[in-house]
Image 1 (cartoon, rainbow, N blue to C red):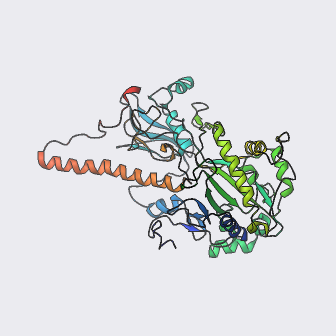
Image 2 (cartoon, helix red, strand yellow):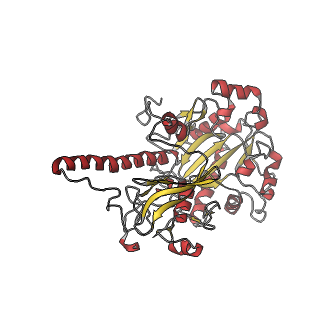
Image 3 (tube, rainbow, N blue to C red):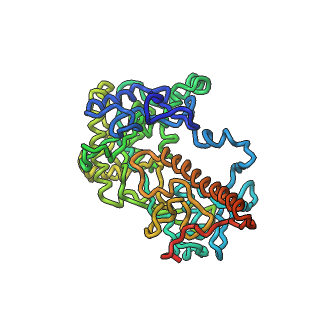
Length: 464
C-alpha cells in the first residue's frame, strides 16, 4: 500500500510501518468506527477524518528514532562529534555584540565550553530550549530580572506552551482473554519473537492499537477538520498491576482506587485527545541553577471551550464501545467504582465527564510553541522565518518550540520536517555565502572579507 500511495514513499532514512502484531481488539476498533459511519482509511493520506491502525516510525518491530535513522549512519563522519551524557548549562552570548558564540556543558563531572565559528543551533525541545534560552539571558525581562539573570534580549520565551491532552479515565472491561495484560506476555516466547523475528506482542506501539480523528458538534462535519483524536489502547492503567503505567500517568493514591480492582484484568481504554486546544501554558525557571528543573504550567482546561469539546469526545468514545464490534467481546464501561473527587457529580452527566477529565488528565507529550516563529511586528514571536532568534546574532532554534499553532495531529512528523527544513536553511545561509565570496573574489580580486557573522541577523526594533 505504502508504495502505491502518493502520500508515502520508499528510500528515505526513516522507516514507517504498522505494528507487525495486533490483538483482535485493534480490528474491533476500526470495525466499530465503520459501524458508526466513518471510513477505515490511511489518515496520514489525503483525508484525516476516519479510523486506522496506527503507523509508527519502527524498523523490524523496534522504534526507529531520529537518532537511529539520521545520526547512526553518519556517526563516524570527521565533521560530526556526538557527546553523549553531556548536560548543556547555557548558551554563551557576547552581551555587547549580542552574538552567540558557543555553549557551556557538563560531562563526566567536568565543565566544558565549545565555541562556534558560525552559529549555535538550539534543538532541545519545547521545554528545555525555553529553559536554556532563559538561563542564557534570553526571555521575559521581568522574569530574568527576578532571578538575577543578566538580560541579553527581552523576548517572550516560555509563553504559548501548547499540547495535545485529554483524559485516560475511559476504561472498559471485556470477558475474553485477548487484551494486553502484562503478565500474559511477560514470558520467554514473547521475548524471543521480539528479539529474533521482530514480531509478537512486544512490538505494539506503546500499547496503542488504533487511532481515529473525528469532528464533534463544534466543527462543520462537511469539512475534513476533526477536533478530537482517539488513542485506542488494548489495556488500561491497571494492566500491569500498577507497576509502571500508573506512575507514568501520575495517578494519585485516591484515583488509583478506582482502577485497582482491574489489576491484570482484560480491559481496553479509549483516550480522547484535544487536537486544537485553546488553553495555553508557560515554562518558567525555578532558579538560575541549570540543573534545577523548570516550572511547567501546562495550563490545561484554562479555556472553557476545551472541556466542552472533550466532553463530546468522551460521549463519542462511550458510543463506540456500544457498537457490535465491541459488544461481541462483552465490552462494558468501568463504573463500579466512581471517580474519587467526583462523588457529588451525577453519573453519566456532562459535569461528571468534566470532573473525571480533571481528575485523570493525560498528555501525549506534544509540547510546542514556547519560542514561537512569527513576523517582527508580532510581539509574541521569538524567531523569524529562518528560525533565527530576534535580536541575537548567531543563534537559531530548530525544534517544536517554534510552532506558532499546534498541528491538528501528532507532532512527530512535523518536528522532523522542522529539522529537515532547518538543515536546508543553514546550508542555504552558509553555502550560499561561500559561493558568493568565490564570485566576489573572482570578479573584484579584493582582500577576503570577514563574514564571521553578517549584520542581516533579524532585529526587533520594538525591543531594542
